[in-house]
Image 1 (cartoon, each protein chain N blue to C red):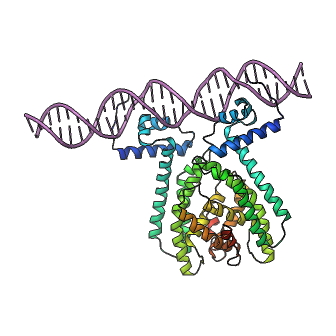
Image 2: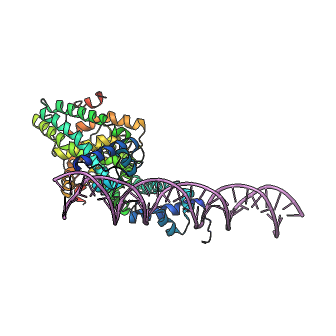
Image 3: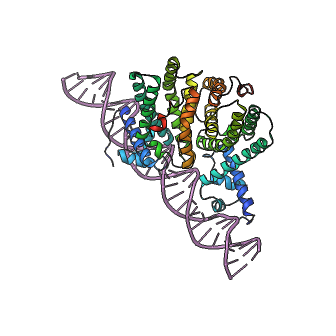
Length: 207
Length: 207
DNA sequence: GTTAACCGACCGACCGTCGGTCGGTGAGTA
DNA sequence: TACTCACCGACCGACGGTCGGTCGGTTAAC
């Protein structure tokens, strides 16, 4: 029998979520069993179910943690940024992409059966990012480079469009579909924000 | 032992897909077992797996069938429509909404655990609807009411934005979030298409 | 006789449960 | 201060039950 180790509940919970994230990340949610998480931490199954009432609830905790971390650093960035709206835009997008690549959770989420989780994660991220972008849109309007009626809604609209059209894994797009959209995105964003032609070319140049 | 009934494979496959659709619709994909489908049709498990190699593949067939039916009638409508681009737009949107309400699949799809199926269905519908809308956008450009660079991509972009921001069930939006977005949508669509102010007010007036 | 549609007993991977155990903590006592 | 003892809840892990999927065999059809 395993020696019993008691820890601070907060810490233990954290441990479990982190281990789960690692595993979900590497092998996918579906292919990761509760037993995997147990073994990885050297704890019993009952312990996990003491903190989470289902495997799915554990996944939600993982998502929440991931989203919060990603948003946290974007918010810090926004607070300390200086410059024109367009310049800030460019840097925020870049930061967002960095975050995406860091958690390859998104990549491994592309397994069949994970579409639901994938969608929920994307929507959660978008819902939290939108206010940050909305702020930049307002600044852009004041500067005169943008002209939009509903900053927050426009931020949501654009983020959703870009994410879902770009993201493979939700729908099995052909490579050429993704390509053709990527090329069209700058122009569409400009139209949406009433921004000068070419001002969002950095969206594809950065790739 | 059950008496063996042999049917035309095409017909049998159809039967299975329809039964599965009913059940997925009513109780959700996850809460529906293969046994449910079997019992509902009075066939053996092996028969189902003779036609579909996994439960997930069966889901794909259900989605494909649903989407094809909905698109079929929209395409017929487009072919026989006459009038200005804006007028056609109005009627296509209306038809799309009718289709949505007809299959209450979308309604019952709002159960937890159905987000994946819901998303896939929406994306599939959008992928097929986009070309229809793109055609109207091109006509609008010729008429001079719209001005867009990439008709197909713009159609995709707008459809995704509208569907995902409007649709509850994918993400637990508050009622007020949905409201505030609904009000902003006409202006955002107009911006994207470079259409005259107010020309898309019908999107909310129809509600 | 050959094909393939169809059957259903069986398998095994996993999630989640539940009765029970043991470490920590703090109030009571001396 | 030192000791103890009752209680809480963190922790354990064998086991139950569900379900997706398999496979050898059977039967209708041509």
